[in-house]
Image (tube, rainbow over all chains, first blue to last red):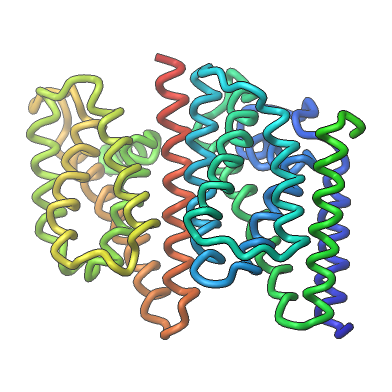
Length: 195
Length: 171
């Protein structure tokens, strides 16, 4: 393996390692920091965001840019539904399932049509957004919170896309598919209630 | 000078005014830049100030919705936006943004310097992102340049949607 893929893989490990707990940990709430940490401090959210970027890399253009452009907008719609108290069934199951499905799509390097990929990612984006929106602090500074929340989500996608570029080399492709297996396994653990 | 600065600060304090104008700046970057929509921009500012005394409170939500649509359009269509889409959107967005900020204020209730500060800050809120995005777009033929601006517009759309939801919840 070349040094660049090694560096990227180590970065991924450390990045994920920093997210040591589920989201909603009681950190100071209401502003940019709260919004920024909300998507990052939760493995179930992190693995799905990264998987979106990784899958986009496997799908190639135009999906590699369409998914990170569309996902934040759809996720914000889910967030808005959560903020407004509009109920959505089986949100936690949907979030766990997103890890399983997206991880498997990466692991098997599935090449779906753009509209199918958009539908899959969009549905899961609503679940993730709704979970965040439901648990927002009542006294949040809307603008600061929204900026932090969206930037963190977008950065996680970019991390995934960055690692997705490893697919340019055969060894990197195997590594990325291995990450997909790991993500699917973690999603399965959440789905089974083990994690 | 104090009144001018107060006017500028007023715009910065209300996301329903500032965010749509930033979205407009990104939109105009794909539609030929400020030069193409400049007259419409100034006309919209004037129209917004004239309509503000008669605007209902809901105009702030309308302004946010307009900004959301402009940002989403930039994110989804981006380089395929026609140049002629610049002026009408510029006029509409700035009209609603200014009417939102100054709604309910009579013509004689605000100092001219305050209104000048608002207008100056509004112009900057459009020109700065538009110029920055234009520099990025004109930097070369790489596809990632347009993508970067579209991702910024996508993030802005998401922020606007969340701000709208927060506003509706508190209402």
